[in-house]
Amino acid sequence: LAPAVTVHVAEGRHAERPAAAAADEAGNKGARRSAMQTSTIGYADQFISLQREAVGELIGTFLFLTLGFGVICTATLGNVQLSLASIAAIWGIGVALGIGVSSALSDSHLNPAVTLAMVLFRKFEGKRAVVYWLAQVGGSTLASLLLGCVYLPQIKAYSTHTSIDALTNATTVECNGGDIHPLPFQIGWPGLPNDERTPPGAILAYEALAAAILVACVLRLDPGNGKPQHLGAAVCALILVFAPLSGAGFNPARDLGPRIASAVLSVHAAPCLAGFGGGEWWPYTLGPLIGAALGGGLHALGSGLEKKHKEHDKEHDKKQKQLSELAVYGV
Image 1 (spheres, rainbow, N blue to C red):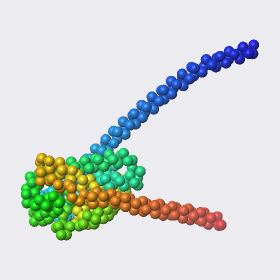
Image 2 (image 1 turned 90 degrees about the vertical axis):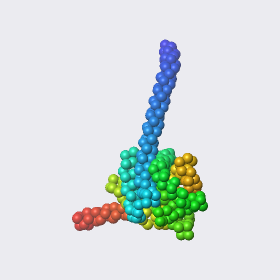
Image 3 (image 1 turned 60 degrees about the vertical axis):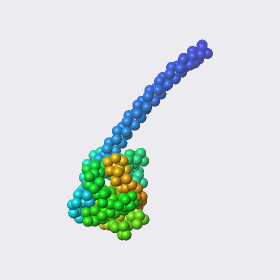
Image 4 (image 1 turned 45 degrees about the vertical axis):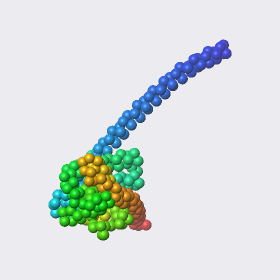
């Protein structure tokens, strides 16, 4: 009887194996299907999130540069006398408004240099950085196109009083009694005469230094404690210091957008703008990016020293507490 029982038991086990394998396979298919659905939902959520952030960066950059470029157009093409302090104040207000408006949609970088600093020192994802950069340049281009169209008659009239060499080489020209840059909505302050212009290498250094200060402020300031107003004040102060030296860019998007817009407008609307976008772009693009790395590194160094100081204070307080306890027991 024992062998017969053994045979039946074995046959039962062999019969159960196909059923168990089928169940396992069905379970695995269900798990894979569920994982694929979860992955699809995850990708969809990421796409929607990136869309939202791109819109936020584009709107914020467009708003603050429309105000900034607009006040330059007013000063250079609108025949309105404005001081450097007035222009710097409008730029600061524009930065604060741009950050405030975009903060619900994105991280409100509004500056490729700031985004680069976040990638290097805050573990900001690369794909998000690319989206931010494209949105920032897009917002700058749209702001430049808008103001280029609004001030198109003045730009055309302005170009008729300039020489071909000045237009082609993107040098400064005389208008409204002063020397200004041929793209008045590009540089933050009227340029210097040809014999006094800052060399491109010096512009690179000035832009890197200013961007380093700005990025350090961005990384250091508390997000929930009036950060937009503080950053607006920082931009205002930096313009007052660096505008006479380099034009006060601090932002690659601020420089690249008008160059793209000038190329677009020069096709039909304003042929007089042809060639404006080719001169001396690299100091205003590379300078802020270099400054972002320097400013982020400076902030990281300061944060590391602050952390060590806090740990030292904590250890000191712990030892003082232990000594106090020993003194209570008369040890």
